[in-house]
Picture 1 (tube, one colour):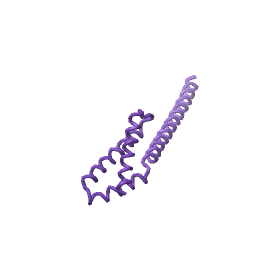
Picture 2: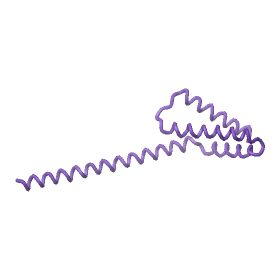
Picture 3: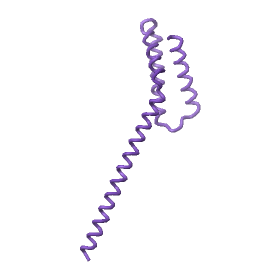
Length: 115
């Protein structure tokens, strides 16, 4: 009888271990997918052409008007900070979203006028 109990306990322990390991693997896979989705969302928000055009415009102003170039760099930094902080949020309040759009518009308008 003792051998039977030991075999049953060993079987249950093995089953529990496999299930726990499977849950851990599944959890890691889901976490990886979440990180990939966040990275993809961040990439889609940054819009490389906007970023490159803005940086190019700022580079033109470094020699002509350093104060304006500094302001544009600071504004771009604020935009990037906002994009990075909002990438982890599921929902953003409407007021924040409107302010974000205004900042993008002002930066792109500066890039358009400058470029």
